[in-house]
Length: 110
Image 1 (tube, helix red, strand yellow):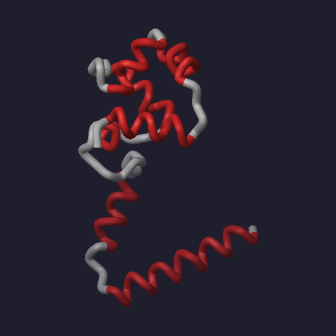
Image 2 (cartoon, helix red, strand yellow):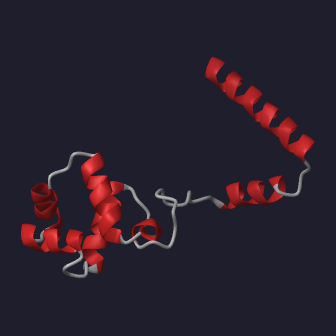
């Protein structure tokens, strides 16, 4: 699905006025309309501004992914936890999940 379709869907779903977006992105209404209809190729800076404004990933907007949200950025320690988690069997993963949920409940009480 091309960026035009995905952008138009987001704009419609969020009841955003093209006039307001054009002003926010420092382009004319006509330019934004042309981007959204495919009459003109969108500039990279406007696409980046739209991604930031909408919270949609660039990969999603340009059709490289069907996942609209950007990947979660992990710290080194979080990445290591995920790597270690992937080495566990199903029962171990389930036990770990229960342990985490127990710790979260403890934190809520404090």
